[in-house]
Length: 200
Image (tube, rainbow, N blue to C red; front, side, top):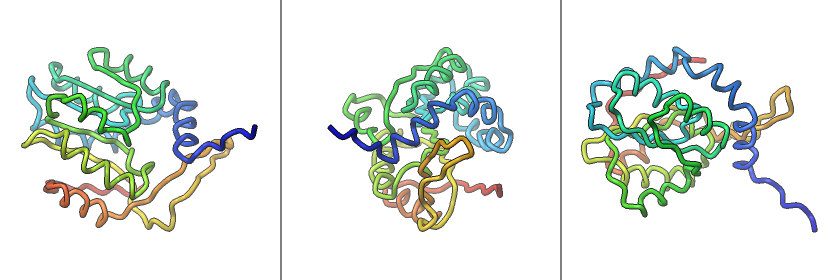
């Protein structure tokens, strides 16, 4: 029987899983990223609940819990090695292996709403179709006065595709324009508080 061909999501997750430690070494305390987390601190209290989507090695959770130690952290990622690193970096957090396309599973569990939802660079690995459902799920998971933090890469959808590095490992990158993300957020009742752009 012919082996099933991996889809683009499987290829991408396998690469992140394989290079989880290298990713952590480069980005865990990456200043251009961490300085964008500071704007979230004024919204946090000791009772705040954080949902960290596609948490990677726990960079966002680690930074925020250092500032607010009583923060309740619930994190998901689809790469087992990323989850293993995140558990080390945020020992008090709760971590689950979960696809961010399946946030309905959290909704089905009737979890208390989250005061902060953080999603660091998962959007470039989701198609436009998946993002439409993703933003609807965020609406169902966030508290009435909650805050959502998103980081992504802007670009024309025509640039999307499989990108292969020097090692031969690949990730599939979906480029989204700001207007599309803005439309999806507003369609789900979110108001954009702040936008920061950084050239790379």
